Image (cartoon, rainbow, N blue to C red; front, top):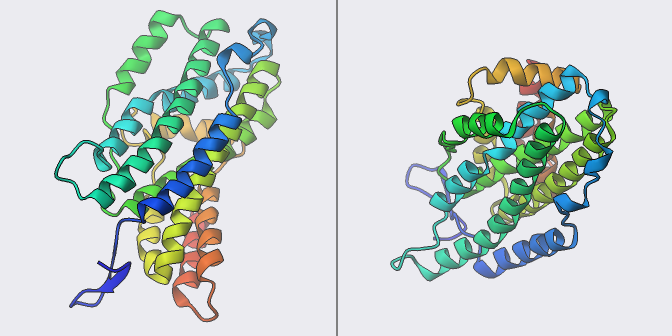
Length: 290
């Protein structure tokens, strides 16, 4: 299949693969940066904790983001199911693409598992929860399946682009509101990791948009129209809790949609191109009603 062809009925059908060598370039860049900018729990100043500086809002937000970060087995399982690397009948080109993506997923999962471990230990060290109760609470949510409803890979990548950007923005905003020094440092580290993840997905989706042009835009619009942050549809009380946390940090996840508009304009900003203008108007309309 060519990168973008027309069906008998007219709509574009996009090839779901980038060439494995192109994917290799994108993943290599991301994995190299991950290795250069990694950090460990041992580097953190655990002796410098000042739990008395935490507000109840701080504690609530930490508990909330621990659930989100700790769901990494569910997120990883979703992507490994969608991009399998164990199938003797798979076309070599598809396996090559999936194998390269797997390299990124391993590095990404390591980052997210470190986030979850740091936040869980922080809860225990500051007396927010006992280890036994925390592990039980995390298991209750962690066993729930995480599923993305998208058929085309670039839509899954776009979802993750938005989610990583939104998470980065939240950590940056939350960091500005806290006084506890350890938490302030930790949130800065989390934000930098999420920024790296966002950069990879931005480059990946950008490669699709550069190849497919305006034909990629309808799929991106569908992601924005249906976007929900992780756990939004599975965790009891998610919406009330997430809104309280977002309000306290002056944060709105729809700000991340603008990253998609900027990316598309960078590759398809042809004078008079209606799909690009429409995407910008579409995002503005969604944000206006929130």
